[in-house]
Length: 106
Image (tube, rainbow, N blue to C red; front, side, top):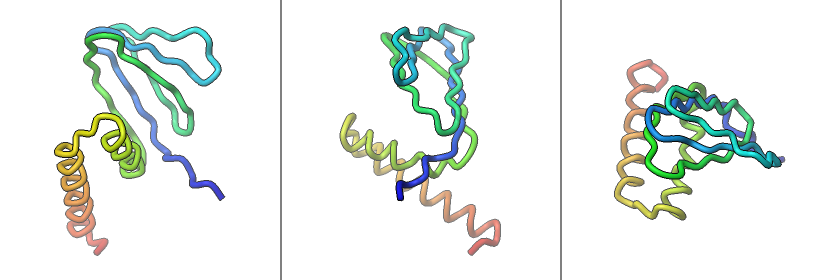
């Protein structure tokens, strides 16, 4: 049985520059400019690229912890930014444990 994909909705609002995005099989790109919002719905795969300088505000809803493996894989195999990877893992797990303890789950 294949693992279930993370159930997260991601809202990517462009502040400066532009973002290009496309769904699998889509031949024409969608272009998002300042003020536009690229909504990536749960369970939908979408590729995107910021061709030059791009600033955006990203807001995600759902099981955010399920997105961590994708960020780790990107850090290991793409950016190779091990310092940031270590800091991300430390802050994530520290806050997960903190929330579990303060909410009486542990």
